[in-house]
Length: 349
Image 1 (tube, rainbow, N blue to C red):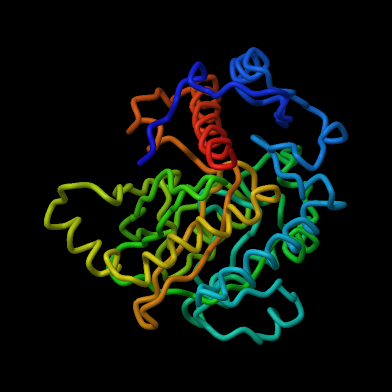
Image 2: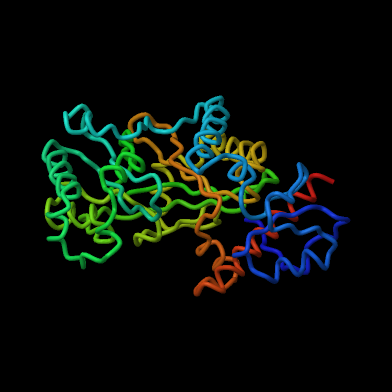
C-alpha cells in the first residue's frame, strides 16, 4: 500500500499542465502553482499533455455522460476481455419485455446511476417479479403515487418514472458470491500503473429496507421482495478487509481462501486492472476504483463497475488521514490524487 504524500512532497515542474475542478482541496492548487505547474480549471484550456488530476478528458469531449460511458465502457471491456475478464451480461431495461415476463429469474434490476447500492434489487423468484411490476405500476400512476409517505411537493413525486426507469435501469446477470456474505473486491489504482489499495468488502445479507427512493420504499414496505439485499459496500454497512496484510483471523483467512485471493487468476485481474487504467488514464483520470465480484460456480472474476471518484474513507483512515466532514474528505481526496500524480510523473521521467 503506497504511502500518501503531503503536498510539500510533490515534485517540482516546469509548466506541466494540470486540470483541477473547483471542488478540489484549494491547498492542492496552491501547492501545484508554487511548484511550477500550469493549473487550468476550464477544459477548453487543456491540451494533449494535460494531466486530469480531477475529472476525465473524455467526459468533456462527449456530448453527454451516456455517450462518455458507452465510449469508455467499450475501451475497458475490450481491454479486459483479452485477459478473460468480462462484465456480467447487462442490458438496458425494455419496459415492454419486462411487463411481458421476457426476463428469466434470477436477475438484478439495478439503477446504473445510483451509488451505495441504492435501487439495486435481486429478482430471484416469480413472486419477486410480480412485486416489481406492481411497484412500477404505482410509480407510473400519478394519483396512486400521492398515497406514498411523501409530501406531493416533494421532488421525488414529480419524476417521470416511466422515462426514469427506461433511461437509468438495466437488467444484469446475477453473480452469486462464494460465501454467505455479499462480497466484492475494490482495487484502487493510479494512472502510473500502481495499485494503491485493495480491499474485500463483505456484508451479511439482510432484508431489503431501502426507503431512500420511491421504488425502494415500495419494494421494501408495500410489495416486499422475498430475497435479501445484495449490496456489500460500506455505505450500506459493509465491512472492509484489507488485502496484503501480514496477519488475518481464521474467519478472514477462510473468506480470502474461498475467493481464491492467492491464485494466479486474481493476480492477473490486478495486473490487467492496473494496465487498463494506465492505458486509458485520460479517460479515467489520475485514480480510479474498480469493483469485481467472484462467481462461486464459474470460479472467475467479473467486473461490476468503475469509479473515478471512489469512496476513500477506509484507505485514508488506514493512512492516518482524517476522513469525516466534507472539508476533511476534500483534503484526503487531494492528498491521494497528489500521490497518484507524483507516481505518474516519476514514471514518465
